[in-house]
Image (tube, rainbow, N blue to C red; front, side, top):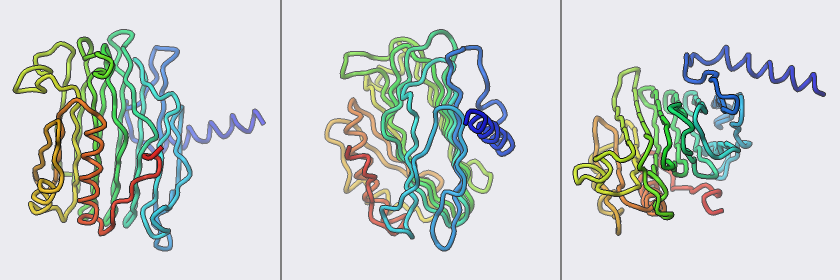
Length: 306
């Protein structure tokens, strides 16, 4: 049994190495306790249904069995699992999702990602990559990411779309743990999001949040708020009417919520102090927008209710 497991591990590693042109995205570090994990998911359309054709992994990243709560001809639902839950200095996590033409997939995760206090000036790195083929659509709807005081981390999302591909996703960031009276006074969180269609950069943004920086408290920055969140819908069908509909039907009670359309990408933002409110607003936005970009009612993953 041991030899079989060892052989399977080698096959899995070799397959990943041959399939990923990742360069230095996930490399071995000097820390003996560092986690270096990656997950590769390939989805294909077979007999009119989206199937998980290949799932390859290294380290503590897994995916649950694909299931179809919206029917066999509906999106493939996948839960991405990271058993350690937290991320520390030197950790390298990569999730790479590739959808063939006509595929539909919804991905989420069971719990928040925690970026713990850094041991030294050694970043933790989280990379999420999505490649979406013609007529395909991916929805990436994870829980919040919590940056503990003293963290040192980088979070990168890279999206490559075919001409008629659609990406829908959100990112909910919490700087510190405001409910526990903790703010980001030390360390730094750096984020990037790059979206390309047919290889051309369509939308790009970069964030840098340093503990104690004026950006965190100044009126021109975060005004002392700890939670900032962004939802984007990159659909060839997106129009200003979507923006107006969202503004009319989704409003924040305690924070700030704004919607705009830039280069065909709908962008919704929240700024406040509650990850719960951010999540509720984005779920409302999802319910409004999904019939527009997918022709389907919003189907909230069952794991959101647990």
